Length: 184
Image (cartoon, rainbow, N blue to C red; front, side, top):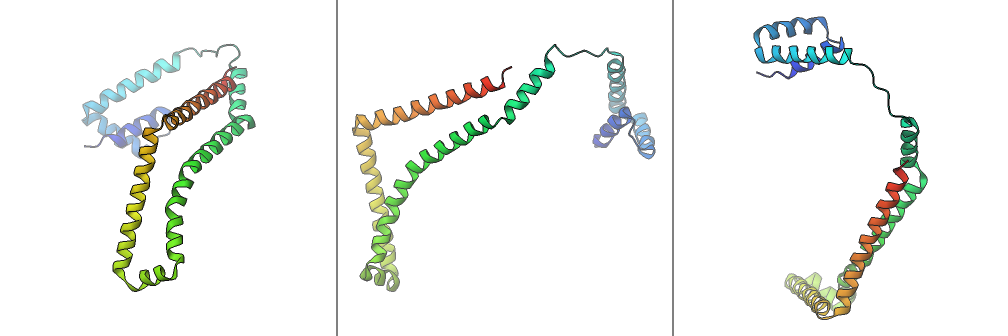
């Protein structure tokens, strides 16, 4: 048996918003279901405690701190930092993706630009498969050569470590700036 509509109705009844026909169904269900009757009794006890509890005033300066935080969240400088971080991320991604893409597309453009190669591609399906195999082998050789160069050259490892360190410092600086803007 699903108790969900009755639990929702209990909450509406406590708020005084339950329609009369649902109130009749809820009362009938509470007479038959011990679990829901216990829940109803508990909710009524909690409601009684909350209605008799004294209101607590917020700490001094609450409104000022809240307004300052809200203003900091909406401040243009925060948006500027976000745009700057996003822009640098895009530039970094482009610095990696663009050379790789050009390295793969440029040989294909040169191959298609040759009349004999274009005719072979159009006229012979095996030439297409051979060309794709050659291009794949060339890409694999380029990737292997780049990997061997990167592994064998300490300067590349130093560059990768420097980029990682600079990115980490950048993120830490942005977080500190963001936290300072949110503090009163």
